Length: 51
Image 1 (cartoon, rainbow, N blue to C red):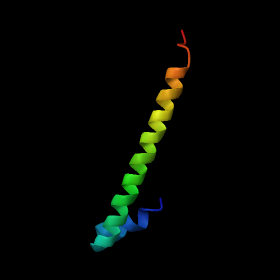
Image 2: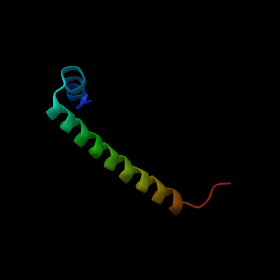
Image 3: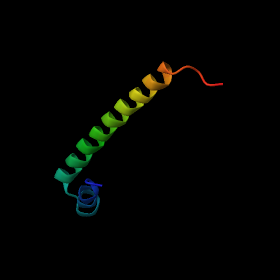
């Protein structure tokens, strides 16, 4: 939600600096999602299989 204003500035007002902030924020989000994915996978692999 922090990026919402930058999305609007980039798409509605053609503000290229806002586009840079959007790209950085999206990269940070991607990295966080990847970390969470790895944690979930590790936890899943550590648990005994449920039947």
